[in-house]
Structure formats: C-alpha cells, structure tokens
Image (tube, rainbow over all chains, first blue to last red; front, side):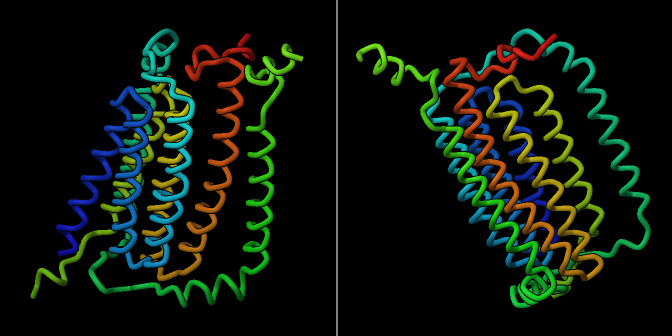
Length: 175
Length: 106
C-alpha cells in the first residue's frame, strides 16, 4: 500500500517537475508546480507529518501558487523566448547538475542505518508539533509573524505605482 | 494483510528529494523567464523540505518538521516580496526575459 502510494506520487512529483522545465508558457509551469506540491503533501502524509501535509496544501498549493498564477495572468507576457545567452548555461549548467545529482546519490546511498517507512507508523500529531512550537520555540514563531508583516509592507511598497508607470505618466502629462 | 505493512526505504525519499532539487537547479539555470526561474527556486525549497520531513521521521524528532514549518513561512514572505519585485521590473522594462534585464552586466 505504502509502496504503491509512494511510487504513484513520486512519479507525479518527477513528472510535474520535468514538465515545469519543458513547458514554455509560465502558466503551464505554474500548474505543473501545483501538481508537484500536492503530491509532496501526500508524501508528507505517508511520512506521518499530518500537520505539514495540510499546511503544504493550504500555504504552498493554495496561497503561494495562487499568487504566482495571479502574477502570470496580470503580466501576460506570453511564451518565453529561448534565445541568446542560454548556450553557456546549457554547456556548463547541465554537466554541473548531473555531477551534483551523482554526488548526492552517492552520499545518500552511503548513509548507514536508514530505516523504512510504513503506513500508520511514527505519526507526528498536530498536538506534538504545537507543544514543541509553543513551548520551546515561541520566540522564533513570533519573530516569523514580524517577518510576514514586513514582507507584506515591502510587497505593497514595491508593487505600488512607481514613476515609470505608464498610467501615472499619462496622468502627469494630462496635468 | 502483509502488503499493508510493506516498508519503503527512507533512502528512496531522499533520492526523490535530490532529484527534485537537481531539476530545480536545472530550471534555475536553463529557464529564460523570470517567473519560471522563481518557480524553480520554490521547487528547490520543496525538495529540501521533503528531506527534512524524511529525517524527522527517521530520528523521531519533531524539530525537523518545525523547521519545515518555518521554511514554509519564509517561502511565503519571499514569494510575496519576489513577485512584487517582478511586477516592478515588468513596469520598468516591459519584459520578463532574463537576457534583457542586464543593467548590472559588465
């Protein structure tokens, strides 16, 4: 059961990630990234992290990806152009990534004492998680909320109408 | 009933995480659209999260999962600010092709 679910959703993950690379329109890449994140939520559930599975769906495939899709639709830039400059990246980047994958695989297969995961084994409940989070790690949690607040203010300040904005320039010309 | 207790080696989860991370690096290097490059960064963050959860399961530690929680929060903040920067760049240059945004290039 666990094996079937793992193979199925790991396959979805890899297929979504490869599709992200192959698609030339950003909206298709965004949709395949949603597939990857939702499959990862199932894998978290298989590993017994039930709160993280819910948070993954709500925060990642919900909030963050809605933001991405919204920006893609707002800017509407169309297909990406595969042009200049990417030749060097292809010549150096591809072998470097293959080498990185080889090194990581060797390291992972060299780890001794890794166990296995089975269904309904080693489940971390939300209660366990929140007990540690709100007793030992209360200060980092609160600092995170300040970080989010600053990020909201920064996003609003950055995305506000700037001087280079055509709408505002027209308004200035009209005056 | 035996198939219910079948075990999946945790190394497979780690290998999946490594593969996803490498695909994210590949997307970061090869893609030419600023939004897709940003999506590749999110893919890398997700890959690392998977290995955090795997190690949390292996060592029966809750702290690994809490780290993933914090990574998610920081990723949300990063996405909000990053996309705002992308909108500002698009306003100024009217393009999202990374080859055209080369003001700081020597």
